[in-house]
Image 1 (cartoon, rainbow, N blue to C red):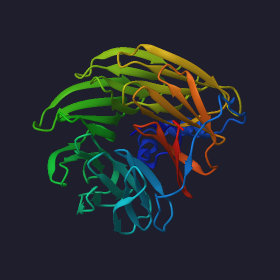
Image 2 (cartoon, rainbow, N blue to C red):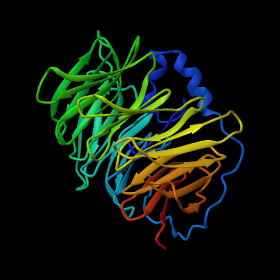
Image 3 (cartoon, one colour):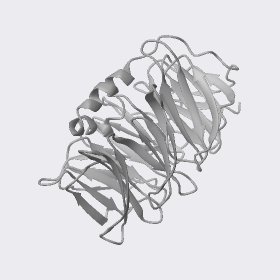
Image 4 (tube, one colour):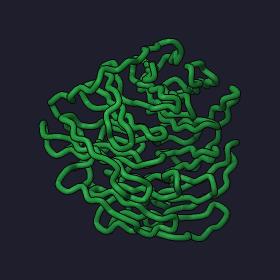
Length: 371
């Protein structure tokens, strides 16, 4: 996941949070209210708009995910995997009421939220599918192609399964004391599960070649919204009120409180972490702060619009604001260039060669910030 927006309507993979702690729903609704002011423009973007390629199949409820330097796209009629230049490398036709997808360089995985089964598409055009014991509500693909899937399971609060690239199951953990919210596996086989308990949030660490839990981090009294692995192995985790940095064994390294602001968007993987916190309802400002993998602040930026999504690549951060505005920053939050994408854009992805992909219901616009 490049980024997430912390709202009730965004990133449907977090649908299980309100059923765990009902009080969270109120805060999610607050975070969903749009601020009404406009983002101050930085230098005009010198960018090339490209609508060639990325030809989406028919269907509704389109959802996109980064897949290497390309994109995965899921609609109600099936799945597609696109290369960096927009060519469809693989596709499959099947019905999904609430299409979801996650991607990596080796493959993309697709599922119908709450329904059984996962599908995989590969850059060579091949496809695969696997049944699951329960309805799927979250999946992740890591840098080596390992797939982590969360499903419902009768008699438990959820099940976590790690699959190899060819959809061979490698590890399973059935949760009885916490509800799995998200989970990811490193290329070295460390699995981290974000679980919601009655008394707070938990990060539980496993090795996929062993049955026993290896370590645990506890956030008393509040959920852990999500987490990610940074490039140096540090874990960045965002709770309802703070950004935390953890070592690989779950030890807390540093913590940065959000104060009275509410979480708007966050970025928790790559060479740095970033959070956006909005200070008011229908006004005020959003403060974006970036941090090194060690948890040290790198920069801060204030904007009069709420941040809707974030994506990073190397030392750059792309922020999509409400009101059809986007800005490319350095990791220290120095403004590089601004661009106004089409009004229906809901997701933004920054690629390795300073290209950005802006995705919405009408398709994908490709921007080259180097031009």
